[in-house]
Image (cartoon, rainbow, N blue to C red; front, top):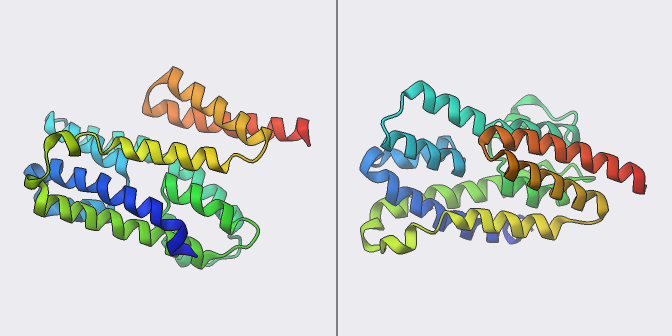
Length: 212
């Protein structure tokens, strides 16, 4: 079950992280694999890489990636409500592997069941694809035409849009997605993602109350 649900994410993650491996290898070499293993955050890794290319200060890189990944606090908080009573170690293991896509795919399966094992398997199948794709990009990146790997990161956005649209099940879901999307586009920064997420939650809650 977890493998079947994870497969589209794994395929996308492999090719996107392959692009990261190609681009990161001149700067980090084999340590790019360690970065994918320990960070496991596509947007943050690509932005950090761009800042390294521009010789940005290390503290600015750290602050920027923390800000970008702060949306994980919202996802983890939601998951925490589903897995009440789960011991802290298991909760930490699960939280580490949560990404936008594994959250979106997993939430429909674990909500109401509290299946911790499913979410963990989903998370780490995605992680394995992300890390192996990075390693592949480092090893064989020189064989890949630049025109191909330069457009691969957009696949992450396309895949998430597909997952999001397939998860919309009613007016409240649609309202939440539309409000969050509009605000994110209008603000147009990493900070805007946080405001957009919060606004989407509030809008979805209000719509659910009105339509319920």
